[in-house]
Length: 178
Image (cartoon, rainbow, N blue to C red; front, side, top):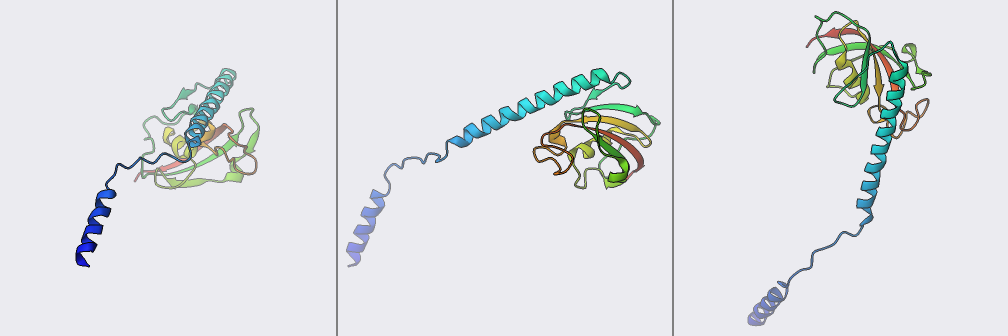
């Protein structure tokens, strides 16, 4: 009985070493979906950048600069250049307002209140997290943010729509270095 067991085990071992055929993905549509999604997002960004260009041509009083993060920034009221810019770990206090690109007020400073947070250490929408880094204490800046830095494909469920680029006016009230 022991000999038969070992022989059958050897035969099963030899038979199981046949060339295995690699498994193919079951859902081939995923790649198509991802490519279409990327294409759609690139189109949204291109449309938003064209809208920003139109708005900046109308805003002759402000000089906008593009940032590496993909949004536009213009100082409305400049502060003391010797003041430092916020860095990771610094505590900033600011107030802001949100408008659509047509200049319609969506949320004002009273509704939103003052915001205080530690730079790059607390959860806040990316637009605000990145925008305050361009302001010195006492400065006011106008920002044109693409939808992916604001409320994205969901909106806020109230006044801000889906994939809506926004104009923020941010005033940095106080900067406390770490």
